[in-house]
Length: 466
Image 1: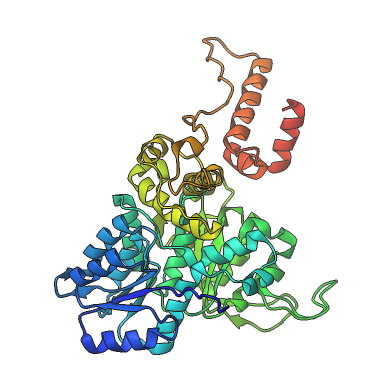
Image 2 (image 1 turned 60 degrees about the vertical axis):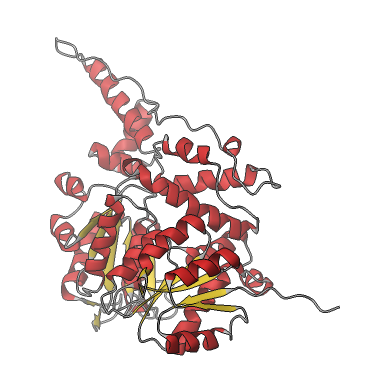
C-alpha cells in the first residue's frame, strides 16, 4: 500500500502577478500545495479555509500594509511561519516585523537559490528527520538545531523592545561600529548579537560566540591569537586563533567582564591596531572581524574598582544596547508565551494551540529573576505536565510562582556608639553572606562586587565558616 506523504502548504501574497506566478512555480520544488493571493483580503480568505504552514508576505499590498496584516495573522494564527518580502533597500520595516515572530525576510530583487534556501530552512522547523537525529546524537543538540532555525529576533511589543530593535537597525549596517550589549542574565543578549550580525554586511559569513569565562587565562593568547608549531610544550602543529577563524564575520564575546585584567592590555592592543601576532610567530596578521560584546555586570563600576581597564571599557563601549529585564516590560509576556508554545509544540511533536486565558495573567504577576530564559523553562515544564489529550495549556500545569524574595540575613542595626571589632567582623560576615546569596555563590562575581580578590574572599569564607 502506498504511504501518504504530507506536504506543507505555502501561501504567497504579492500584488505583482508576474512575480507571484514565478514564485509559485519555483516553490513547487518544495511543496505541491501552493496558494497565491494578490491582496490582504484574498490572503485572509485562504488562511481561514486552508491549513497553511508558511506565509510569504509582501510588505506593500493594494489594500493595505503587509505589516498591519501581520499583526492580525499573529493573533489568529500564532504558529504560522512567516517570511517577509520587501522591495525597499531600507530594511527597517522588515527588521521591525521580527518583533512579531517573522522567521526571515527577502529583499527584492533576490535570486532563486536564496529564495529556496530560506523557504527550506523555515519549513524544516517541523521536519526533524531521522538523518538529523543520527547527526545530532543527543536531545540537547537536537533542540539547539531546532532553536537556531526557530529563533526570531526579539519577541515583544513594549516600547523598550521597540527601542532595542531601532538601535539594532541603526547600528547593524555600520560595519565599523563595535557594540556593547548589556542586560541581566537571560534577557536575550546573544539574540541581539545574532540580529546585528544577520542584518550587517557580514551576515553571510561566520558568527562566532565565545564565553570569556570559559577560556583559562593560560590559554587565552593561544585560543584568541593562535600559535605556531612548537610555540610551547604540546603545540605539535600550528593552530589558527578565534580572531583568524572568524575572518570576515562577527565575533561575539559574552561575559567580557571576566576577561582577566592581566590580558586586557593585549586585547586592547589588538582592538586598536586590528593586528595580532600568533604565539611563537614573528609576523602580524590583519584582524578582519566585527566585535560584539555582552556583559551582565556594570563595567563602569568595575573600572572604578580597578578590576576592568578604563581605556578598554571606553574602546568597547562605542555603542551600547541595553536590554531591560522582563519584569520592566510585562506586556511582552503574552507574545513570548505564544512564541514558546509554538516552539515546544514543534519540538515535542504535540498538538498544542495556546494557553488558557488565565495563564497569561498568572504569568504576568511574576517578576522573573531569570528573565526570558526563566519564562521559557517554566513553559517547558508546564507543557510536559499538561494533559496530553488537551490542546490547551492549563493553568493547573504550572508551578507555584512566588513573588521574588531575597533570602538573605537581616543586616544589623547601626549602633550610636563605636562598634567593637567582633561586631565589625559580624557585619563583614553578613555582608559576605548577602553577596554570596545575591550572586548565587559565584565566587568571581561576589569578589568583584565586594571589591576584593578571589583568594581574599576564600580566606574570609574560611575565617567566618560561611
